[in-house]
Length: 91
Length: 456
Image 1 (cartoon, chains in turn brown, yellow):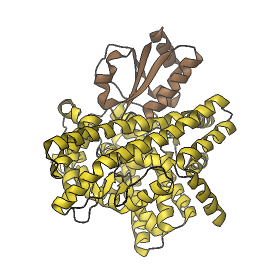
Image 2: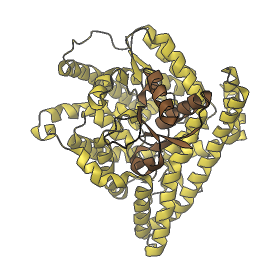
Image 3: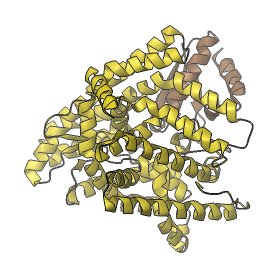
Image 4: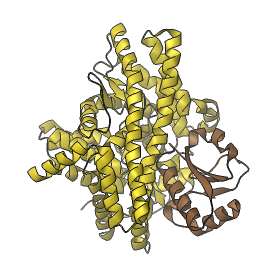
């Protein structure tokens, strides 16, 4: 199963908000993938087996996997474009 | 008043892991969620409470004996164990009236927007818990639950006003336009603002420093398990445990700090359908005008100054905890002081040296406030049956967000004259900050200062 990782400052609230939203969108589109919210301080270890990274902050490094703008999921602005990228990355 | 108190008492006796899921289920059904989704969210909420009870219990069981041994060896009694904000949030959601804060938050925001007293539309529904926490502390200290809600309304207004200010700083620091962080924890910046103005005049405090390189070196210490292991090991040593027992404590402490966020995110998982529906509703109704969307602080988490400052403050907190007379707090779960670093990364516009100075000078304040609030947090944990606290120990949050505000306003509401004086001074400093910073930002970002009124 493909894995989506969302990171925020503590891996509790913001990342989980986005992760829950992404999960819901994926289940509506009948795409199965694991979506996990994590602490950005441990991202370097945890991102290794993931297929998509949803970033709340501007990433300083390239991780070699598709990276989406997580803010769009919070504000709703530009979200459709990010959802399309997500689906393309998981297909 | 009596009716409300009786209802509260009855509901409290059920225990948080039962009654909060029931409330969730009712809200979910009222919000026309699918029944299976509503029941799933409700049970997850119960799981979050039970899980948090396990982890906090585990933390207290391993940390408290070490703290007691340390007290016996040295005479320094740090009896209030710091569960951090995750524990604070967990016992707050257990308060039977916590959910009332949702409509209050939304209502005040809508009124403020409609009257054009703010540009901030706060869609961050997670930090409703921080407002509920204020309500609880004020109602405990003043003895009147309604006064708790009055202070919450003041807090929401202040949050929106500071949200209006931060939009600029956030665009500068993160590159994201149109968003802000109307978070309670950033409000301490207003008290530090006069110092910031002084620092503006000192060349040393205006140099650029590279936090990214430092983060690369220090970053590993900010990982929960690494930090937990170090603090646990040190605590074991000062408690006179010897190396082998200290190593065991190190792993236990690492376990507690690793599990806190893992369990804590279950609350957000349960709340996400509600919070999503609310944000959607708010956005739909106010999208046709210039607004700043209020989000939670992690949009700033990419600024490495934040993490470098927080790591550098860890030894400072431990040192102050030991040497400050009257301090009862053993820093642990809340040792990464988000409450100061998020506020000062905005206030200092990412200037690392200023941030560290602010962190150091405020550490004693955080510890004394955590000592002050420890009995009330312990009472909340016990009354709601959310977490068991063993006799002789207290539960607290070493780096409580905006504790000064809670302290001043709860003592004012309790009718103490000096509390009222503090509250007035607090408001005066906030007003001074609000207008001063607004002018400063207008100059910095070449915009004309607007002439809108303040809470008029």
